[in-house]
Length: 433
Image (cartoon, rainbow, N blue to C red; front, side):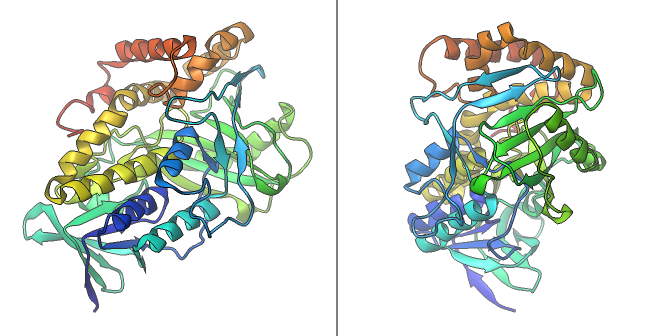
């Protein structure tokens, strides 16, 4: 058995974990960056890094695809406006405007390249890569789950540290063993994607109806990718019922056929079945306490995926950075500092978005009606700018004007309509502190 001592152990080398390790190592901390996979490895995702994520990368001094000197196999594709297609086939373009603290564009880059480059940046900064599966979260004292002594891997290796950052995804072992997740309350989701050998100009989200007036409890997408390929998939909200995740896998072929009917793809068949990849999401923070004692959860492990449109990369990176800053500033109080910062950044939006998500997932006719109304041409043109800001959680940092006013009004209305819901009540103290 080997044993090593660190200031922080980061479990998971996705965007959240790698950014946390990068910031910590650059700040002088001794960091172990643990992952069960060998890199590069693939990930089920739409492969889009939104404007907030691009801003974080710029602030960290990283290229849009990761670390200088570690380019992806193909250059990233710059994307801006997004097309939303409703159940009736009508569509609206959501504009991507430049904000005060975010650019007016995002990047499409495959996760196998993006994640590998961010991990390489963390290692270049001084983090020690460790390949292994976390078997146990070790307590510092018997009967005291509030403090940690590190982790033990499946090969018996012990990594000692007073702080463990769980960046190990929606089904986080760190979060579960620290007692920070209530799976009965969590808002689970499942996404499956396939690559298509045909180009796509605009990132497109489809508010899909498998049957007329029965809205799919999520949405479909077809996004641009490198080398003239497209990334197409389905994201499904299951609330607390993880057995329902298989629905997305079963429905994907039907959705890909419907993309032809809608004129969003032409002739190419999807790639071989092995090219399809699925994975779990945890959204809206509900059911998760992001930090306690010496354990801090970031990204999907903290449930930070946007419940309205499924974005998680930007939230993973911002939370990873915030966790690292909290540890560097005051290790003994890192959980409290991080929880307060996470609440400041995300609680106001997530409490409304989570409650709306629950309403839509559980009411397919309401979801179908909302999709139809929002894509009526006159309605879509009137609300598109504000819709883009609110849906993408970009209201803070948006320039003054009609679009920001519309987005803020939507937030106030949403808060008033959802303030007494069970999902919204999760955000009452002390959950987020």
